[in-house]
Amino acid sequence: MRFRIVAALVVASLLAIPLAVQTATAIYCYKGDPPAVYQACLAYNRGIGQQVSNQKQLQNIHNQIRNAQAQIDALYNLIASLNKQISSQQALIAQTQKSINDLDQKIRLADADLTFLKAHLSERDQLLNQRLRYVDNHGAINYVQLVLTASSFNDLVNRMIGAQQVVDSDRRLLQELQQERSSVIQATAALAVQRAQVAALLKQQKVLVAEKQKTKATLAAAVGYQTELEGQLAAQYAELQAQRAAINRQVALLARKYQAAAAKAGGGTGQFEWPEPTCGHGCISQGFGCNSYWFEQYEPSCPYPHRIHTGLDIAGPWGTPIIAADTGIIYFYPGYYGYGNYIIIIHGHGYTTLYGHLSSFAKGLRSGQIIARGTVIALEGSTGNSTGPHLHFEIRVNNMWKDPCIWLGC
Image (cartoon, rainbow, N blue to C red; front, top):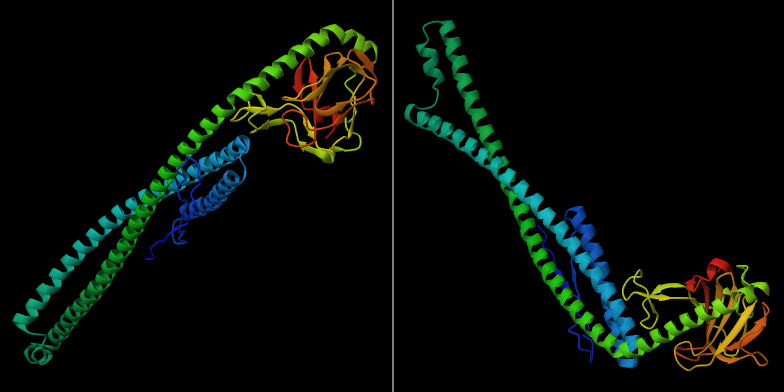
């Protein structure tokens, strides 16, 4: 019976972070284990590698970046990795327990079989002992005496046959005893192997349960630190939400005022041009949909942290011309926060577009003016809550944001 080796993968704990990140431990996967346990063990160890990577990445981010958003992004990744590791640990614990239960049942059956074999062997041993005592008291068969004391030839033959039968019976008894002793030895050895397997699996399970508890403790610490960071960002996020609410009100107001005029001018057909002609689909740096960026719009249907990116980010060079995606009535909003400098265009029939993080507006245009599809309206920039030059582009239908790729084919 081979014994499993528990190998510890020592991971550096996070520096200067109020997290008690625990060491991730790999389990030696023995090929002699039941297949389900062996496969679950391999899956568990693969998760360990990812866990180590996440911990190192978070340590580097904390040491090199003093940005709460970057730290919270790293925490989201770490928490996801920890949850995955806990699931893997739980799967391996469950598989191990099942194997222990199966082995326990086999051991009980093997114990019963062994008891029967031993009882049968004891009975046969008693027969042999009786035979040996008889031989000891009466001596072995004396063939000369059989011949001399026979009353006739038939009597002699009968005596010889009887004597041979006694000899054959003794030989069979000895052979059967030898086979039964061998069976008992083999059954005892097999039982010992099964008991050793159970002992090893119990040891492995004990390690896994301890590892799962450490992982849960790390998860709790990570969630606690995440809550602390989110508290620090709450005020800034509240300002962004207030700006988004103001934009929603602006869009609703402008739509009521200009829907008919924009549609009469030819807008609102549901056909849109790419808003940054010199930088195509390959310049999309972030698509529409759920993400983990803390400052995005709240969306309960998205997974934690329940955020959604409400448009497309198109990352071209600074100053790249931005065009109106469709004919409509334009409004300019200068600002330094959230979307920075942004534009709203009412197209009619419920369609609206928004263009954010602009470096400047096109000269010669004014709010309330009808502009044609393809007109240059602004230049790309990085104003507001932005980490680099890009255009944030939204298409809204009845003031509800939709994936622009539905119309733009990206």
